[in-house]
Image 1: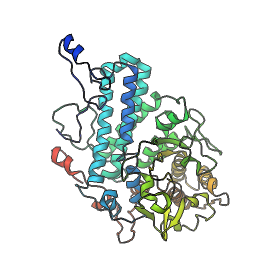
Image 2: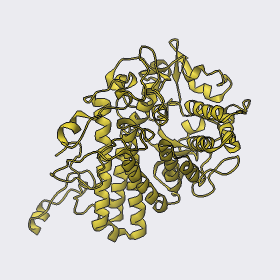
Image 3: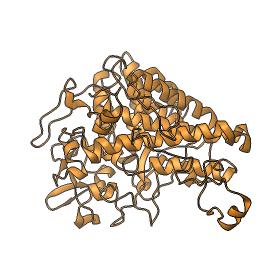
Image 4: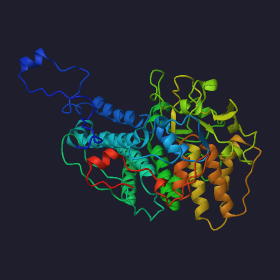
Amino acid sequence: MNKLNKILIATGLAGLSLTSCKRDVDLFPAPTNTISDLTAYDTRDRIEGNVRSIYASIKNSGMYGGRYQIFNDIRGGDFNNERTNVVTGFDVWQYTPTNNSTNSVQNHWSQAYYVINLANVFLDGMSKKGTAVVGQTLSNNFIAEARFLRAMSYYSLLQFYCRPFADGNGSKPGVPLRLTPNTGSGNYALARATVAQVYAQILEDLNFAETNVPLSYANATLNTTRAHRNTVIAFKTRVYLSMGQWNNVITEANKIVSANAPFAAASGVVHTMQANVRTPYTNFTTTESILSMPFAANEQPGTQNQLGFYYGPAALNGGSGEYSLIGTGIIADANWKATDARRGFIQTSGGKSWLMKYTIPSTFIDWAPVIRYPEVMLNLAEALAETATGVDARAVALLNAVRQRSDATTTFAPTTKAELISLILNERRIELLGEGFAGADLTRRLQPLPAKASVASVPSTSQQYIWPIPANELLLNPLMTDN
């Protein structure tokens, strides 16, 4: 059996099979903290506990708890590696990961399929027993969350291991599309689906999730950490943007972005930008943060994985200073004024510039951002700009709203479609800096991975443009092919 498809029961805990007589049960009762796969769907609390376990697994530092964002950040042209440490992504930064790169290529693949399998096990358990316990409506809520998290996992795999959708309209090899649970030994050989087929499954999951997750939750923390309707819609705009399907981006974004400023969602959780750009990084549950991975005081994202650890040096937040900001990167942009409030995230130490969005010292338990409302606004702006014959006025308004939240002195007035698109892409680099967009924003448009320091640029046609398939998968899945 492929060890990446870990043997699971519903809760990820060791099960206990009780087949002896009642006297044995009395003498050796089942521990109250151990739940068998036979009883994991007996109550609502246990069922919801399974859902939470999927969230806990996608929050793993190898996924959206930190490293997904970091790997995308350092594949762009704005961060400079300071430690030459493969453990913290030096090979990813210099575009040279191999099939055996444990901390990137192998770990991300393994964790993504672990989340996918958790979701598949849960869906199977709900079909066999859970739905009858909680009823169809609540069952659909929970199933929708699991399918949303499965979609997020497949999306992350596509960004690293597969050719972009724009290369051949999704016809290139994707990843194995595993939709049934692996709970025991068996033949798990499975060939790669196409990129288009994987995206189709992602959208099928998201469409189901949109109509079945709750409209909102009882408090701001849940609205930021569990999927509700507007979370799913926001993620759909990202997926369609990655596919270059501009009209679909517009259709989805219009559900949660008003026609005119001040831009906000009209129903469900009323997402909008905060007046102060710093607020979402100190108050993690505002309506600007659509989805974040939370960390409690006693729950670090894992050693050498935390966002603050990577981007902050010892002198500023006790971090390791793995990646400083390249002086010729986005911080050199002449249109990014010194008076822009986002410049306050850039601090100097030891003669270098550092990104200080994540400032909780030592424990580095800043919540990891996954989706913020300005991303959705810029997704919509880009799609509007791409589909217009000239300069789209609403796209300009959205662009200016993002910029003027931090810099009231700047008003963009592009005169051509190409200029507008360039300004929007540049604004993404500024607004979303250090949040996991740089690499994916380059590859979805088939732009080269940029040169930096001693590292040469990588054209979109190069084998280095995407990651290799993990050696373990190639060894244990006889139908798998490498990139």
